[in-house]
Length: 235
Image (cartoon, rainbow, N blue to C red; front, side, top):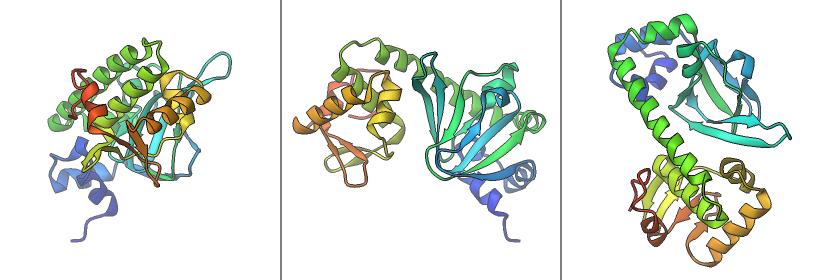
C-alpha cells in the first residue's frame, strides 16, 4: 500500500523517527497540513496555547516586538522542527509571533491530539530531549548577549548557529541557512549597520566567507577560537 505523503514526511522528522509505520499513519490522520508564504504570519500571540506546529518543509522565526517597535528574533526553526508545544504544556501564551522565512509546509496539531501524541512514550522522551537542548541554547544566547563587544557577539552567534546548521567542508564549516544582516541584527540585539560593519571586517580578515548562495563559511581557525564554549560541537 502506498504511503500517504504526510506519513513519508513524518518518517524524516526526529520527533517521530522511532515510531512504526502504523503509528505514523495514525498520527498523520490527526494533522492538518497548511502552506504558508514567505513573510506570512503562522502563529499569532493569542493562538499560542491552542496548537502545536511541525515543519514539514521550510524555515520560520519566532519574533517579539519591543515597546519601541524593534523586532527581536527569539528562535529559528527549520524542516523537521516543531514549535508551540510549550504553551500547550503550561496553558500560557507567549509574547511572540511566528513568521515564515520562506515558503513553508506546516502540520498543525490540536491541543487534544498533542496530548494523544504524548501517549507514545518514545515521542514524550524525544520531546523532552529536544526541549532540554533548546534550554541549553537559551542559556548560551544569554551569555552571547552579555558581551558588549559587537565583533565577539556576532562571532559567538555564528558559532551557536553552526551547532544546528553547520556542515563540514574542505574550507571549514558552512552554515546551511540564508541569513540577512537584519536577521543577524535581530538575533544579536544590535543594529543592522553594526552587523554589516562586523561582517565586512570578518570577511576582509579572512575569518568568514559569504558564499554566492548567501550561506556563510567559517574557517577552521574561526571555529577553534570558540572551541571551549559548551554549545560548540565543531572543531
